[in-house]
Image (cartoon, rainbow, N blue to C red):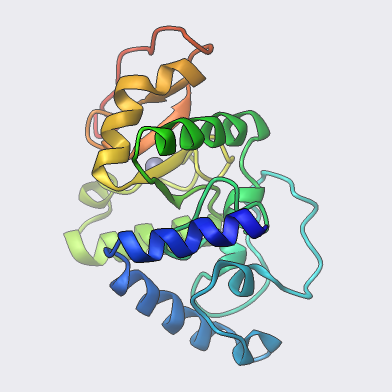
Length: 214
Ligand SMILES: [Zn+2]
């Protein structure tokens, strides 16, 4: 935990794309926590957003929607900025397939040795979270058909089962695309440079990418 905090602090100094995300997390936290104690805690730290006195769903990867009302929050897999694959106190990391999480942790460590700091922008996602993303895309793109080119249907998203991660920034995506196969990690979609799955054996060859819009 100590090293995790140090890592976070270092990253705060060196990475700055998170202003909007932090603002969003703050907004989500405030909107979602009408009944929960988290309101009094600093909203932008990963530990505080993850902690909840609500019983866990048992760590299953079913994507079952939490019972809370309001917009998706940490319990749905929303991750704060600078989330590391080692932040296992966050549901979005904790509910990943263990083999995938281990591979991403190994890649993160190796990447850091190469001078690149990665963050997990999305790991596991609840069905509620995925449905909300799709609904927003439908509004944005005008039709469900068009929206599905950008956001997976909840029944098809590999995030809901904990078998996919979205990684940033671009330098980390580039590193993973070149070296991720050492850990079994592969970019699987032609249209998403940030989306990786455990798709080969360590050191193996990644399968051809697919176009999810077809
Ligand atoms: Zn993804």
